[in-house]
Length: 535
Ligand code: GLN
Image (tube, rainbow, N blue to C red; front, side):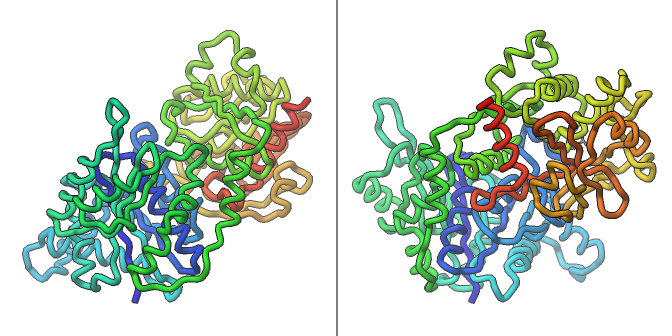
């Protein structure tokens, strides 16, 4: 019998439900179980594709081109569970499907209601994602906070799992906050209230994961247990870790969480071996050097906007035994500064991540020029690669108005533009190059060296391309094309000649990097930044 673990959250948002869910996945995988991860987002958007990175953080892209919540990135970094459109469920998708069926007459004239039609559709989607012989446990993270109107249909569907499958096959893990009030006292009341909220809808949590500044003392755990009816050994202290979220599986294991889950679900697992994982944390803690990486972008103020980028640079740091210090530079501000030199004074490597829209573009072009002229390692991802081409065309080819038609539709020199067949298409979503595709790398280039092979598969999420009209000219004047798409020779990667390390890629390598398997481009970028620093 397949098992299901629902992870809910109480008290407030941003407590780390995604990291909790994926750390449980990590431990269960470690015990030899086959897992799947699902994120439920209780908003009406059909997917995260149109959501602002400012409000919602990064949009994570899977191989099949699904634009999903950034928690899928957490799943990808902590577990080996495959991710596709099946693993991201939103209220919008569920209602869209139910309404479609209603229009097609599939409900045979019955009144269509939240219970059972919406809840049945939710259950169907969960079963679909947990299909497959290799799947033992499916972990479902229910977004939002218990008590929100939006999540009620999902929690009701979750409650029905116990009714449908039996208690021994379903587990509820509830994440709450134990805040510290003035005087340093820890308070359990918000936890009691949020557990009550869950009970009101018929769900008794089996395990509580309590976020708190410090490890919870025995006395505190007894009190929480008394008020919530959760066994003392099943109250896990998710105290604030000092170094990295990658410590979480370790601190959960130290509190026996994997055994508790196996016991409750009547599963047996292999021995736990967290050596690889604790080695990673060890490097993060003890590396004796620090590399300063400048990120120039327009969503600098919200850490989550470039989540996978930051994580991937950390992974590159782990591979090179260095700590990473990020210097976050607002591209718009950079455009206004005269003294660009002082901003980049202590920076060992510059990374320009992906982005949409005109704001901050000139600041990014300035950063690219500075990196090129001062031989600072430069890594451009998607928009960051387009910026490299725009800068080169302006300053080396002398095409002063070189631009992308995304930012200047009427420009004389559209070095980045839509493909002929995309022009005139009105539906924005339809024109986007999304998901996994094959690129062919050019031997002798830095990118080829990084991958050590010619054929690569990476994920895309962009609309504009390097215009074929300018490729010859760019090449003649010293821009190196490092890779092309397999089918139609679109530019996938560029480099500057006479520069120690510069790579721009049209795809998103950050979605495939993990702490255990750092992505080669991030490894080489950090390595180049270390050698730049030591010169
Ligand atoms: N805005 C650019 C495009 O659509 C780059 C997209 C990105 O960086 N993800 O092509």
